[in-house]
Image (tube, rainbow, N blue to C red; front, side, top):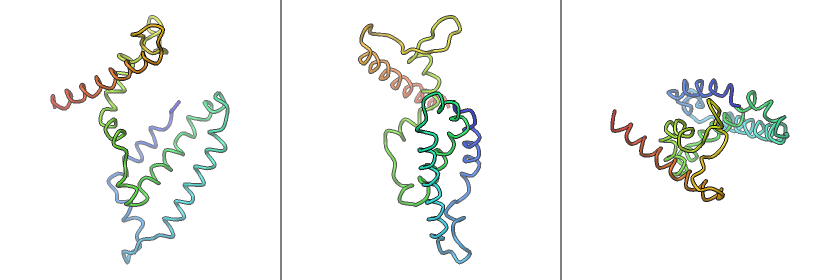
Length: 160
């Protein structure tokens, strides 16, 4: 579904080295709060419009426009996240920790967490370890999945 979001990711990665704070200052070194506030208001308006016009659609209508609009909330989140020093210093430990093993979770999702539907089939079901117990099966499979992802990330770091 996220067909074009990689372009936004590459553009954001290209600009990581640049200092956003330096760009929002005038030549005298004074912060440009009116400019920053207006861009924050624009980002909020984009989020509200996206939420009302795109996110509230039915599943199939949403899926048809998602590849073309998924970048909007991502970009506004990135702007809001980096808009002030106070926001940049805040984070959730769990997401920061899991962000260190995203490559491993991506690779292992098809090998540990899901099962295929047949020969060369795409994975559509959770791997069943305990029959007739969906939530217990989900919890155990997810724990094994995350623990293996963390362990493989540590092994990858040790190999370097």
